[in-house]
Length: 181
Image (cartoon, one colour):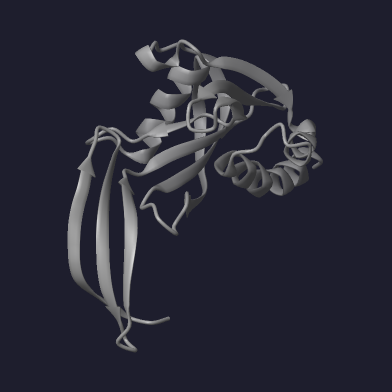
């Protein structure tokens, strides 16, 4: 991998959720590259599975996509909040359920070609009803889908966002192995 040295960074936009900067770097070979970088805080994403082996999915409007998408619950990590605390809060806000068991599955960058957002992926089980209202969740619809149907929803394109696809594909083999024991 070429080492880079930052030559200049210019902030173009500072928003509530994202910031945009233009960064020019010099590579080890002397070439210069200019990149637009979207700065976004880390987030969590959750594979929540109920006692009947259903995965909890949410359908919510996504303005950037121009339609409502079927997704796993996810959201931002508030200042001073740990990723696990964010899992508990976001799951309650988006699905109305509080997990009794939370385990880290993995983590990944959402779109590292231009964005700093890193997603912490968790498995949540032993769910108990414990709604927590948040103002931006009124348009979210909860769906319970048998875990065995998740792959079909991905391959049919009904689930089409990267975090949900990655999360479900990372979870399915281990969950199905454990469920069959």
